[in-house]
Length: 117
Image 1 (cartoon, one colour):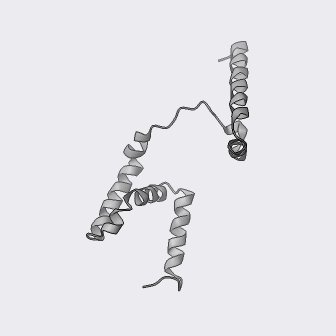
Image 2: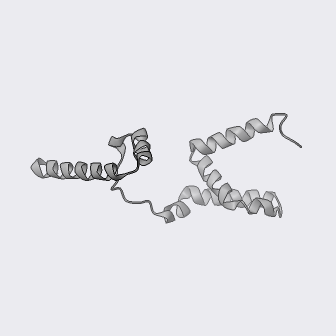
């Protein structure tokens, strides 16, 4: 878009964005300000939850978990944590900082005297 129409649309967008921000709780506003108000888009389309299930990373994580469960035999306590393990596996495949921190901690823990054999 060009010209005056774009400026009016942009001004309307900013006006509506500010109105939404002003109606938020102080805690919500702080969260937005922490990541940057200019980067925040309150009008973006929500993510399709089916995307997470069908993504290449999710499929690969499912295959890895199936192999893991098979290697562990009939260990039911592991299977009861399928969702958590799936989330961790997807995070590791995507190099998610949270998953990488869990991995680093587990590797460290294996080398410490805290580990009980």
